[in-house]
Image (tube, rainbow, N blue to C red; front, top):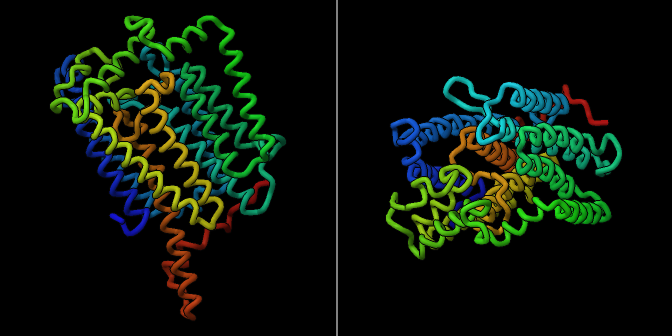
Length: 400
């Protein structure tokens, strides 16, 4: 293997993806940046600024935070409260862009509260569901307090839906449902979720305009200058890259042909300039990162740590897969960024914070294993091992 442990793999791949992201964001955005601001490096400089903040957040979270301190009911309720306030504030004072009120601008920077809501869902579910698993309590979608976290995520989704942003609202709620499934809800409830999804899709098809959107997703070429414009442009960008791609920076789609070329559809520009081989390399990076995260989750004996890493994997790798599927036409357009490759400040920082939590869980589990080995060998655990492993539960009140 290239790496001694999953932690090294995650850190290496994170840095590699950020380097690729810098190159791709600049290539995808310099035409738009020049037209908007007169500075072709506008989005690149902002990406680097957010990356610096995200790097600091990652370092603090991964190496200086005991993740168990974030798993208390008090902390998760504070996080939930702050998230609801930010989402409500977005509806009140947010700036309208493309018909949606999704960003709060503070000085020259923007905050997208819906991205923070995704991280909040992971923290809530890991704390609440992990605690129930740790204490051997039943996890169910039905009945309070077992569905407490689900109810709060539904509030998040409703506020995001009002922006309006149906795609992100669906992701937030689906992320919480996914974590309930990982926590071990009954097979009957899983089957009921599947049946409910089929019913909702059937009801959506009853409306003529929704049915038209579905048909347009299946065949965007039936209206290439109207509703299918973005998808046809994306597919043409990907197809024109061929095996090895066009010369870097010379992809034509960024010249105002492909909307959102540096954000949601950045993968299309990447494919155009790096080709099929480049796309396979990028996908391989995400697959290896997924392997590393799953390995950490499966080896975590602390149920809260397991849920935290499992939810982080669902969030980060799931979004990456959804974005690439969306850009290639396998999924409908839902406005999901591609981790590190798409431009987006709040999203970048949220991703790096989440990866920091994953590394923090790995370090805790490594310390536990070292402590157990020392005890088995008849040696006392080191103070560092003991401090990492022992959770600060003195002020922790269990969930009811």
